[in-house]
Length: 170
Image (cartoon, rainbow, N blue to C red; front, side, top):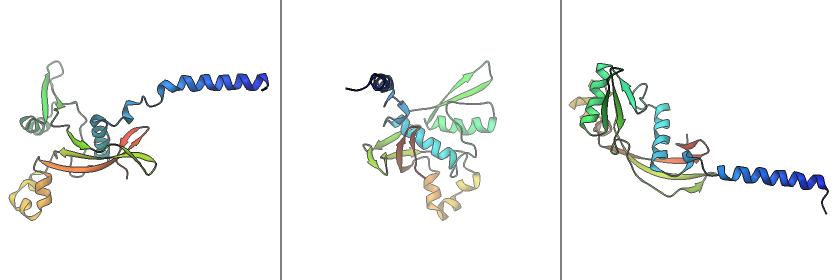
């Protein structure tokens, strides 16, 4: 028979375990969903802006800057963003459409390197592309640049599930 002290310690430990049980696995950031994969990719590209905005916007995004409005309106024309007016603030508010935030497919998460990993296929659009990169001479000389700036580019990435959400491993 266990002493009373150990019994109360075990009861307290079990009570703590039962209190924590509802929180186990409830972190929506760690679920294998297209939305969480998109968040993981966006976080990666925010830290690794390969020919994207110098300071990438996070959507929804509000601006009154005419140059930025012109660029974002081009994405509205391609049905990647929607725009609304915040009349009181005199800004345009941009949000992504389903096509603009699309994850095409992903593999079922499977353990690898100590974390669940998935392969994600997605489409992307480069923004704030300099004028010189859009010239016919540059597109002919650099076919990869032409594809990346075409508005129809796609890629694949490996994402690892962590407690903080899905991330592209470095």
